[in-house]
Amino acid sequence: MEIAALVLWVITAIGGFILLAKWIAGGGAKPDGGSRLPAPVVFAHFLLAAAGLVLWIIYVVIDADALAWVSFALLVVIALAGFAMVARWLPVYQGTASGADAAPEKSFPVAVVGLHGVLAVATVVTVLLSALEIG
Image (cartoon, rainbow, N blue to C red; front, top):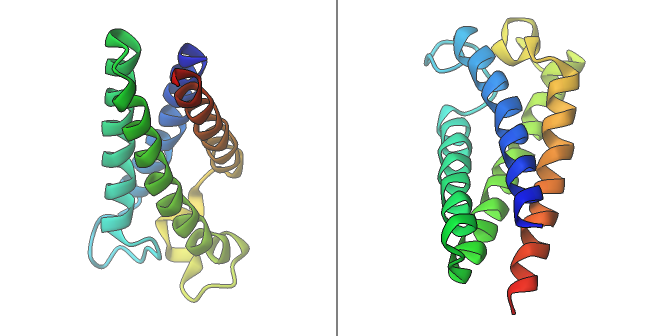
């Protein structure tokens, strides 16, 4: 189960990196970039996800049970930030937000956003199941 969680996390991270790169390339990180996604939330989501992935890799290698639970706790925070970003992205995607056409996240591929979300949920579930198998 730990390896399945690792594979899911890596694939999810690739999708997230694609979205982050498109957002930055579109000017999302600039103060006047027109993004509805707050830069601190975007970068916190990315950095916490990367840190959690590194902790999960260490857990898989050395089997330190506490790291599984720390990784899961990080995933909960990461997921909350992800939900907040999706809630702000949806009006841009639907074109109902003011300035939606100029927002860099308007160019996000819907399939990548959807797959990133579905794989993220699968990652949270497999990490939780792996952590529960410890005890």
